[in-house]
Length: 160
Image (cartoon, rainbow, N blue to C red):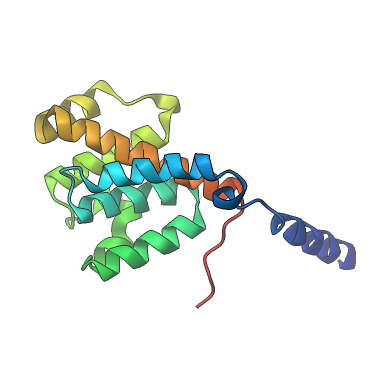
């Protein structure tokens, strides 16, 4: 048992010794921030962007981004009920048709192995129009990139 505890402690210590991309590679970080600046200008509402960010982060298991974006969503007026139910959005009545399309698209972009289905794509194109569909795909792509940075560098949310 002591050996397992030591091994886990060693693993935790090594996980904390990761790079900070913003400091180590500022050009890469600036490129990511340029994508964020683009997203601010899209026609997607703040609430829609929050749902996309939270759902992709849940699927990817990025604890830092889940913490950050749920707090941002609450600050922007999103209900706790909807945040708590987001992982089971299909089974709840809390999300509009447009939000459901955005969430389906986000899931398929995030879990890209199965591709974005023709059904999801056509429904999104009908409900969102081409420009908003492009913006929604980019929002999902950008948060997935941030999730991968957060996971690869072992970013953890602050306690408290």
